[in-house]
Figure: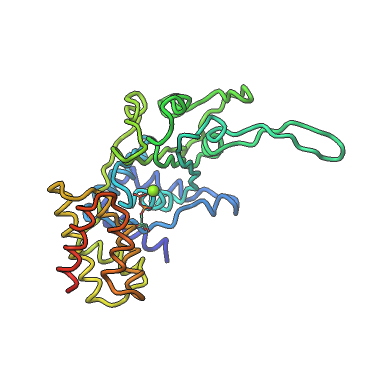
Length: 301
Ligand SMILES: Nc1ncnc2c1ncn2[C@@H]1O[C@H](COP(=O)(O)OP(=O)(O)O)[C@@H](O)[C@H]1O
Ligand SMILES: [Mg+2]
């Protein structure tokens, strides 16, 4: 079922033959049960087919892809969809200020077996993805401390290799290895991404999905089945996006994640209360909260 869906999408995308060949050969690879579970589910939808097309082409060419967009725009969903397209397992890293070399590369540990003690190295996501030729997903890459990520420079450029500082092992990436990162620029707690690092990526903007495709996302992913209500949530979303564009409310107010939450809640709560809880109450600014609730009152009156 899923395979058929993907096949149809790749035809609809009119991908070049060479790219389809790369994808098909990746799909033929056999993975262990454990790795199989790291293959994404797919399901990213977009008003603009170019987003998926360009990301697939870039990855097939061995480029690193940086997904840039506001929170809840489907960046992680897109990364999972790319993994599912190539049928390639994806190892994930969630960046935070605490992210260190060990979280990326792995760590040493002491193992006891039959009265013998030995030191073993547990491979982290970067090393695993490189050795197995899998994808590596670096989420919220600009949440990491700027000094942590340069260890990945060699991994991200044409060298595709790293000397593991914990084991001195030189690790070269296996064919198929690819890096997808996500960034939410300007968000609280983030730092501007280092230029040398950004330079190593192909950048793909991921805006909030709208209209018919958004309707499909809400229909498929929320438990709200009342079509009239779904239509109202679509209007709410497009009205919020208009307010975002004129700078009246912050971008995260239009998050698709929050919108799905509001739809889910509205199965059991009056829509206005659902919107208050899922969207408005998250905003720090009183005026912005009021703006959202005004839109909601107009749409749902
Ligand atoms: N374009 C989209 N296509 C499909 N699902 C989407 C899309 N945008 C958002 N979603 C859904 O909204 C939620 C948040 O998406 P996610 O990928 O976690 O966003 P991000 O990583 O950009 O913060 C998920 O449930 C996801 O399935
Ligand atoms: Mg995400």
